[in-house]
Length: 528
Image 1: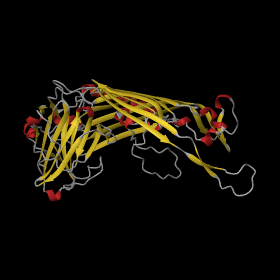
Image 2: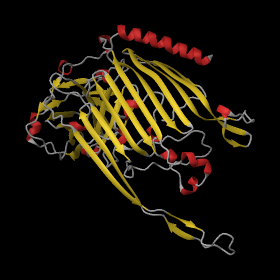
Image 3: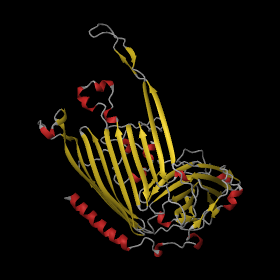
Image 4: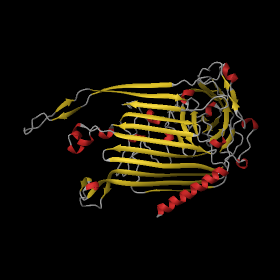
């Protein structure tokens, strides 16, 4: 009864939000701060005649032609006031690269800069740029650098935060100077997904962060605290024309030779005395693989993998568990799955690619065309049927040996209005005695500049072994027990699940409130 009432409340909320979104524009002048006239129009980016040398010095003549961004505004902790120090940013491009230059004025002895790890520079002085390459106010690249040019990159999704697991290929160099520090950056267009050409706009903002000035943030664009959206307050750049759109092909072959061994008894069965044992090596095992990425267009990418080798991927940190009731979720670090991973992320986590352990073959197509964002993933995972020599000798495992699990994921999302979207997601996982099908819909709506509403409803149907301690009697047929452990049994049967989540978020200048609710039935579970 409680779930039914909550679901009814969410459906009423969704209907009200859709009506309000259609009637209420996001851009309401009463909720905006004063924007200087030169920042309220798209800025045309200069095309360079020759590329600058990326050495952090900003002494190339070509920078004299660059489009200049200055007059930054302190947005935090001050509320659109004068900054503590001045910042000048420069931008240009050619047919292959977007070039950025930053001159951050400061006392060099007070600059906080270290040779940090990648994606770990936002705890010291840094400068970052937000690139909304589809100008949809929903998703943007966040690229940042510290005074030494150490990089941080991620994808900001409005309402979901920034995912720093992605890695953008770019070149950067920074250095300390007598009047502060400078950074030069070259970003290949082929590292980005975008729409460009005559008349196309990119949303953008540049932000400088001082660690020692109470974590001060200075932005090129002012930010109103009465608007619950960051990307809807971005500036715009244009003029990115004549960009090379060649189809890029990346091939990563791999070959592994391995040999395993184990200690076996040295004495025949029934022999007396201490068995010293002996070490026996198994035959050499050769394993070849291939990973491929094809940039079909600047906004469409195809990834394929045949027996990929993930040995070069950063290892997971050691985790010690005790009395663990739920599985541990490790961060995805494999490049094949990281491409377009933000497309599959929803408020309720229904896609966890680490569940695909050892794919024999996998294919993924991700991209955005107009208002439609899509992702499609297929994989054949060898891991569930991969047993050790001793496990293969167990007759219980006989019908699982060398069998693959088949996984499919479909994600579609449609932009609605100025800064809202609605989408669907479907997943399928199929293995012997383990089947799961999932379908869900979700949406996020910018009701007005201060109010955001979102929802997600998920339904699953599983056929697998369910834990049922109440049943102590053997039941034949469809509820045949998978295994018996004392008085408890696991039964292979059908199980249907349901989960929901709803959020209504109001953010004002001086106060705000948040209402959220979520729940699920006992059998809710996604196996992908």
